[in-house]
Length: 228
Image 1 (spheres, rainbow, N blue to C red):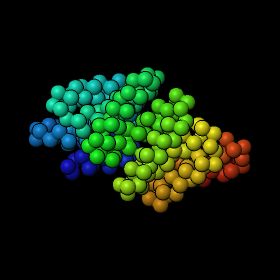
Image 2 (cartoon, rainbow, N blue to C red):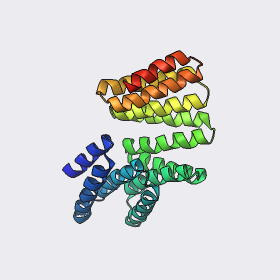
Image 3 (cartoon, helix red, strand yellow):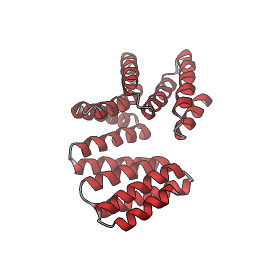
């Protein structure tokens, strides 16, 4: 558990190499113990690390192999945990129907199990699927549900992530004021956490909305703040 916690911390710091190495070590321990939850959580960290390094084929290969193992064991949580990164790869590869199916299946399994964090992760992939598919109403619905789950879990970083996805959904649908409000809320949460790097990314999203609102002076002010 300590190794997995350390791996997650490395991931939070965007240190993909250390996250992968530490999570891989944790994965070996959990396999020896027969702890399938530990295995699933460790694999998710490894896959997230691969995502940071754009190693999508390796992510796909590992996730599909683990999905088959969890399915054979009848482990629904493990299945849901693997379907989320599978959906992310499918979305990157423009396989929209496959991504929609995988993310929807992951969401349904997580909801049945009462795993709010996993359901939220699946919903955030669904936001991107719906935005790409120009289904703005469903994108907003998925983002709002993810936000609700993260708020119930009292997880500020997850809440900020959901707010930024909701901003994307509003922006895609032309609800620019709503997009601006949610992006600013995400920025404030990250600022309060002292997460300067992710706050900077949120500020750039605010700037993007200001450009859509045809207020370039505000956008420039945001960019200057982000690069300070």
